Image (cartoon, rainbow, N blue to C red; front, side, top):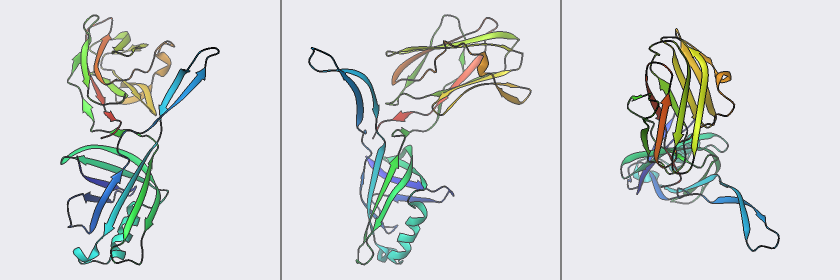
Length: 272
């Protein structure tokens, strides 16, 4: 159950809103839009056949609507001051980071922009209605890092992903124990199989970083503290693998001595 939320503006100013407390002067009446969002589908009709042919689907943006009552009399302040404090966080058009706490534990974050801020001005117990638009509908959970895994030409390592929506990841190797050419990554689950084939040369001590995070995909080599892109060394048949909900099987192969690596990711949730 949602027990509180917090909001942070671009300047880093944060406000917390516990749902069951009267100590802040902000009495949260309801928070809407945290359930899974609607999906939209592209379909085609088939001549002479009933029904539709599915082509693709995507989920819409998320609209979070907050309704709260201002009770300055409970904290020794005017309702105007409480409202002005909210303006600093929820100014229409500006970015806001919306954090979600479920059963007293931090659950995840939405990245939004304030669409509207509507407030009663001349009532004793004014209501404020705030609408947030989240163009990425997923709630991003706390960053997770696997234990150190080892390369192997046959053995698969298991990553049990608890999110409800696919997510990208960042793989970081340990320093290479010797010079080599080529590292391949195979990832499979119940829905799909993917492969990233890096054919570049690596020296002893080099570190390889691979990211499949949406909006931040890269393949980089770190040598003597300098980090450069080596995307041109990836084969054209490679695919940007994602973690899917449930069990994911990963295998990293290399022609030389084995090395360790870790995978970092942020779980994505479609709702609470």
